[in-house]
Length: 188
Image 1 (spheres, helix red, strand yellow):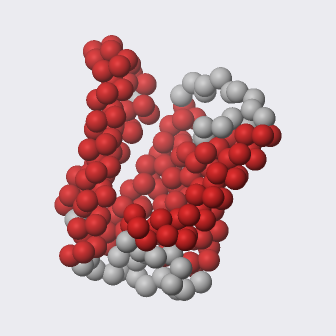
Image 2 (image 1 turned 180 degrees about the horizontal axis):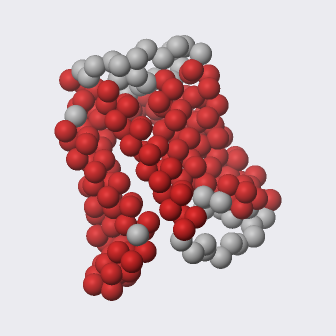
């Protein structure tokens, strides 16, 4: 589980830098915009790889189960994940969804984490999903203190596109992708 924790520390540390505008500005000044993005990307990627590897190792080695979620929480988690999958493309397609939610990617991460906390009671899952949920809450609060980016009014077409893309991705994950990528079937 140590590798998972190291990966989470790297990934979250990199993603906390934008929440500290003075720190980010200093790094951009020192490294240049391209250098900053390169370091941010590399640290994030290294953290992500360690998270995936560490989570897989922890589950393979067997981690303690701290609680056994009731079966009905699967239905809530599946509904939450449908919304998370719609929010991901909505983050990149300006429309009413993005304007209403304001930060769809962060909301998607928080929704994903909460949904997975509802159906996983092992220690590795709690560490992973609670960390991402806590980061999402912190980042959303910190965004309220930062200057808001200029809002772009998007079209209803983008909302429809976000819903279609999200539903197709959701269906693919439910059908087989979650099993292929994560090793856990959704439908049993």
